[in-house]
Length: 235
Image (cartoon, rainbow, N blue to C red; front, top):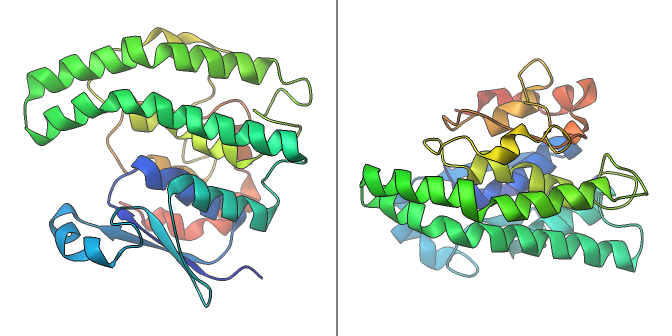
């Protein structure tokens, strides 16, 4: 049995969300420790790298950095690549998702400054212009996967799917105009609803209009609903 994991992250989706999705999907025991911004200054120096997220692995130590945490969890639960090339392809996709998120900064800074006008402009620019080329490339990768077009890499779910499935609800600002890629039926990617799984609540604890998963829908089936029953307590 995998050791209990405690995730430490802010009370939002962001870089902690793919970790939550992986932990919910695998069904292993875990805690979701959410940190308010007001608490962060006092906590920062106690974290491995002075940043979030990080996890405590019971009896084994701490691990930081989103992709490293996802990679560790994936190897614990068979959600990694089947060979060295697939492992590298998964890493490349995860890095590319991080590249896509670099353009999100102006929107976040405007929000922190409580400048709604600039936030809307930055959000529209990011979602409508900066993010679309990334989405187009990811769709192409999905469609060109001859091993299994339900997945990004290989013929089974990998942690790359979990990293990407959360990128739309996280990075498309709630006040941004609808983007053309929302209309791409092949990449979209059904809307997740509570009837599919209580695990979808992980994607709904922020007031964002749409939440997406790509076509595999993260395999959130009735088994996952039982595994993730505690996630119904999320705000």
